[in-house]
Length: 97
Image (cartoon, rainbow, N blue to C red; front, top):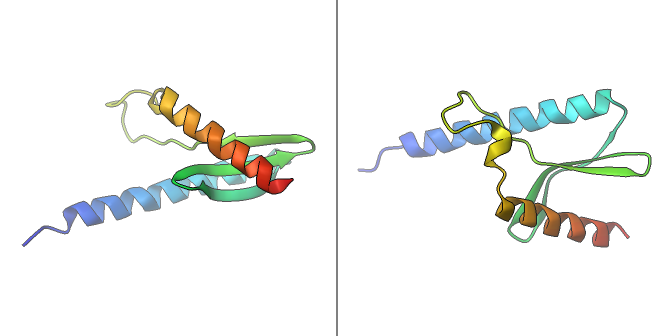
């Protein structure tokens, strides 16, 4: 019988991700931004957080880490992820207009 450890681990990571996305949102709100969306989806692509302050719209990828084993969280955003974020951001702008 398969172990549920993988499922539990995945669920735990999702909960941790949601926690840090909420913290990021709280930070932006404290800086005067309005939250436009959490977990915006454009097909299979996702943007964790979209915020706006006046005419500035910020598309946020939230990364967290409990250790430096895999490097700094910013190092885990590769070119493919940047392209996916850009495509999803373009879709968001199209939908907004």
